Amino acid sequence: MQIILGSSSIARRNILAEMGYEFSLMSADIDEKGIRKEKPEELVMALAEAKADSIVSKLQTMNNQDKDEKPTILIAADTVVVYEGVVREKPANEKEAREFIKGYSGGHAATVGSVIVTNLKTGFRKGEWDRVEIYFHEIPDEIIEKLIEEGAVLHVAGGLIIEHPLIMPYVKEVVGTTDSVMGLPKALTEKLIKEAL
Image 1 (cartoon, rainbow, N blue to C red):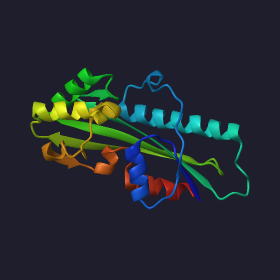
Image 2 (cartoon, rainbow, N blue to C red):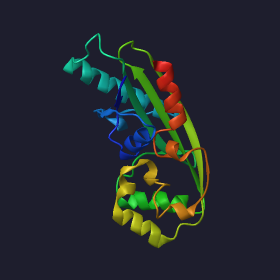
Image 3 (cartoon, one colour):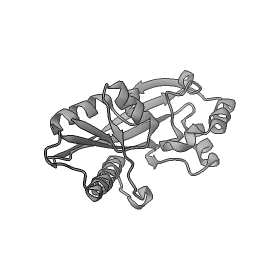
Image 4 (cartoon, rainbow, N blue to C red):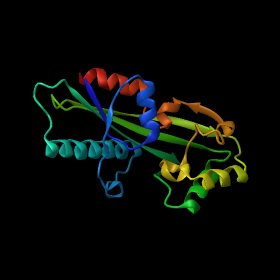
């Protein structure tokens, strides 16, 4: 089979490679802010669905789907951070990233992530979501400033990167899996790929 990862996320790319898959990359052209849902679970599912639809229509335009080809699996995913009941997406700027991270200090946040797998040959599509709770020790201001200066936190949901060497010492507990927090829960992705084949 061929696999297309519908994401420009480096973390998702690394996780899928760790799972032993070879894949190509495509990113979706969607207006994420244009998609709004009340519940974080519904939001991440709707966003992943929109990403998958966008890539499927891109592929149809390119029209390179030969009917005898081996099955092609498209994986689309989305993650948001939930803090005190509020959904957080990528921070708009350094100020917002700083506020986000200060909020986690000594507190807790959750990530809600979705994975949607589409078999492009059969049209089969299935998706599920996953939630992880993360508890933090106090995070010193100088650590927060270093993270912001470095910039990676500006490109991830909620400015949250628990696998970052600067943040790791301040993560008290993770209820769930780190790969899910990073944007692609391995077990769920594996299960959906098997179901799609």
